[in-house]
Image (cartoon, rainbow, N blue to C red):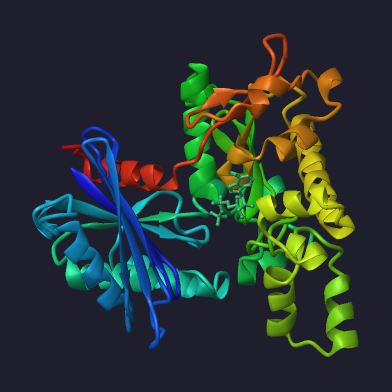
Length: 405
Ligand code: ADP
């Protein structure tokens, strides 16, 4: 069965088509600036017979429907397409950011599920409405094809009460659902599964710590294959310092800033989500730019990296303790975790007494698949496991529909 995986944003649509009989990627693409009347861009990449091919379309896409129509045209194009017609797509998997506690596993989309996505937009105003839009577009353009929703909060719903509760008046939880949900759950779930596979252990026996270090960064502590704790909270700003998000800060800073700078709730949110993190400290978000600036002697870039690494190490220490100092592995993933040897080395520096011994040569060697970057005598393996959220979503769709070919 072919599964089309869609990650719909407010002005973008990321997609991948996977053949789940062989778990191979047939093509991927990204439509950007949807809704912009003056310009739009769609980059479509195919991986057919071991050959990569890239096609670019540059013109405005007034709506998500228009962008999806162009995507379908490329998927079925006699030259650059990978399928003959849209009927060859057996299911569509959608990434949805927030499902609250009502959704504890991937679900077939129906009116009830759409209603949950709509209601949970309160906690994910940037993402949920866009994710719902992607579902509605798929329903319109692929009538009769099942849609499966995979929620980023799903993995976190398995956390114990003492991990997900905040010590606020209990009615904040009862009336408003204020609790830790854990974001990036689809990635953390996939990486836990892939780690167990790599270590040759049943997932149900895996204890690990996952560091998802990308533009958005988060960590998960996994016990017996389930989420024991997550650095992400009610929204997607708590925990680690990120590209543009501040991570954990003293909550008293928020009313202080609102009062002193005369900020509204929307403005203070924007400050924490979009103007903080490494961007706020040094004006850059991409780790490659930050390293280049550090090499040129930029003090603020150096500070931004130090803040980032320190936030990871503090969380790593907490999770190491929660697992009694005996995780089966600590795992780096996502853009920075997979590619950046400097950050990984800084995170692991001086942790040898705890049984974490990085192998500098393995850390500096770049390969595409899962790998070990610790020495043979490291008590706790240090791994790099590339995440694959789209495969996780497609696997969920196959599982729900109960067929793989
Ligand atoms: P997102 O959170 O948007 O999914 P990714 O997981 O793709 O992000 O991570 C993107 C980030 O990964 C970039 O902003 C950059 O900081 C980092 N990155 C990507 N490639 C490299 C590289 N070769 N070296 C260092 N950092 C990298």
